[in-house]
Each structure stands twice: as C-alpha cells, then as structure tokens.
Image (cartoon, rainbow, N blue to C red; front, side, top):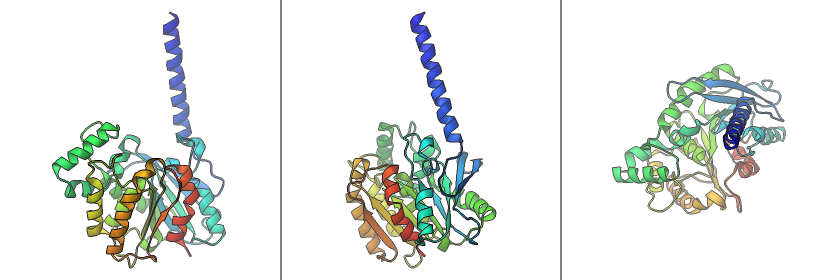
Amino acid sequence: MQPILGKIIMLLFVCFVAFLRSHAQDSLPKVTKGKVERIHYFQSKNITPRHIDIWLPPGYPDSGKYDVLYMHDGQMLFDSDNTWNKQAWEVDEVVAQLMQAGKVRNFIVVGIWNGGQTRHADYFPQKPFELLLNQTERDTINSQLLNVGRTTTAFKPQSDNYLKFIVSELKPKIDKSYSVYTNPEHTFIAGSSMGGLISLYAVCEYPEVFGGAACLSTHWPGTFTLQNNPFPLAMQLYLEMQIPDPANHRIYFDYGNQTLDTLYPSLQKNVDEVMRKMKYNQTNWLTYLDEGADHSERAWHKRLHVPLIFLLSR
C-alpha cells in the first residue's frame, strides 16, 4: 500500500503545482508603472482564444492620442512572478522611464499571449515556407521540428491567420477602445526569437498597417539547427521580394552571441546584405549586436530601450 500511497501523494502534488501555475498565469501581471487591462480569452475566427494584456502608461489618457506597440509572447512581458522561467521583459519599467525622460513618444503596449502549443505554427512565416520551399525542403523542416518536439504532426505554419487576427480583429478593437492613433506612422510590432521573425513577417505582409518592427534575437533558422536547413535562404529571398518601402518604414534587428543566439550572427549578416540591397540605411534600419548576451527575457529587458528609441523617438 505504501508505494501506491506515495504515488497518490505525488499526483496530488503535481496537480496542485499545475493549479498554482495556471492561477498565476490567469491573474493580472503586477506592474510598477502604469496599469494593465486584460481582454480575457479573446475569441477569434482565425486563431485559438488567448489573453490580451494592454499596458497603459502613467497618466493615460491625459496626453491625447497614443501610439501603439503590439508585442508577442504577452505572458512574458511584465511580471516575472507569473512566467514559467521567472523572467520577464519588465516592459512597463523600461517604457515609463523612456517616456519620463522624453526619449520616446507616448504609446501603449498590447501584449498578445502566445498560444502555447500553437506558438511555433503561429509565428513561423507562412509564405516563405509554402511558396519558396519545395516538398523535400518542407519535409526537412518538418523533420527538424519533430526532432525537438515543436510539432507532433506534419508541420503547417498558421502565421497568415495569426496576422489576420491582429489586423482584422484585434487592432479594430484596440482602435475603438483606446485613445490611439490608427495610422501606420504610429503603429509598431515587436517580439523576440520566433516573435522577432513574425514581427518582420507582419511588417512585410501588412506595410499599410505597421510602420515599423523590432525583431530581437530573430530566430532566422526557423528550426534549431543550421545543418541542412533551407529556411534561412527562403526567408532572405522572401525579404527581397516583400520588404516594405524604406521611405516610410523602420526595421530593427539585434542578436547576442551566447546560448541559442550563437545560431544568429552569420544569418543576420546575410539579412543585413539584403537590407543594403533594398536601399535601407541608418535612418530606417538598425542591426545591433549585444556582445555576450544570451537568449532570454533578462537580456531583452536590458536592451529594450534601443529598439524603442529607434522606432518611437520624438
């Protein structure tokens, strides 16, 4: 009986921990500056339901209309007590300090929670995968993602639907509910890792909606190896065809050189060549190397001021 009792106790403990984690995730993040409002489980025709956390800066709405920054992985943005790895971007602290110092325009942050198991499919650029890779190359990507558990069936990107959700469902809700500008000159999108990749894809697919993108530690491989990986070249070819007009768009990239970021330096250099070829320059494009930085929310927090000033300076 003793082993059975032990298993029961362990099962109850696991369930209790899972309950606490779920409860913490469902509670509003604590912020030290401004406040957070939540749309609980936003219902969409395009993607799975998910929370939307809207951060409003101190004094909102006293300053009239505000710019809008859409950010991916919304559950990782504000409160490290609520995250799986006890790290967060601490966006409220960084943005409030920049606003108080007069270094950026007034803006709100719309944090879009990722879909958990759907995250990789939601964030993986769909058109480069479907239109610029042949079946053998798509099978290679599928195999590489199966090997690391990022898919359990034939991999199928859903990023076109994810962007359709942002543009046709979420943005109209934000535009109607908050005191914000609605034009692309005041609308931006940002994320890290796969979130950086989907941010770039968003500004390419919807240049009439987003005036700029911040792509931190952009996960150019799409999978988790550089060996026999056809996706980075497909993404570069896509950029040459679809990159938005540099006359009225700004694009920011960065990368570290530790942990997962060790995959990025050579690929980022190739993308930088594409940017030069497409006539981007220092006024509308920045690639920043954060020497010694790893792939973590703590690292992105430390340099978040760089893309924010680049995109949203007064």
